[in-house]
Image (cartoon, rainbow, N blue to C red; front, side, top):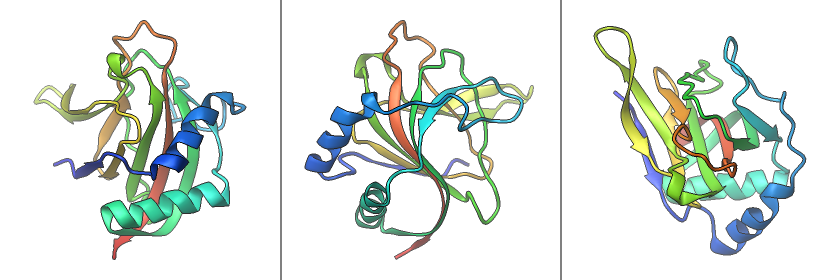
Length: 172
């Protein structure tokens, strides 16, 4: 069973607008993040500055009532992969939860995230689709959670800009 929660208007409007305006101009690197045995699916810029990380940590406490114990990875990301790449990022005691915060995309192309289950033949099927909306946050338990960006039906070159976090968290 997929354990996830979404929240819209995750960051305060002023801070979000500043990030939204600046994110396309970061210096994107293609080799910072990868998934073993999967072709490259995103570009990254990270880790976040301590000030930006703190802003996300405060929003996580306020919107999800969760406190960060540790953070294995955090980064700004830009993805424009057309082929779905379902994967699991779980690492015990290092990546128990993931937080994705959508920053910028073309909302008409979906640009969200698919969460998959496997059918009786072992094939991945979309179980849950979270559509892209600016300043939407998705918090989900990493273990056994197949997920992938959803840009496969897009002809747009915009892609999706997000902030991602691989976390160990606790309830407040």
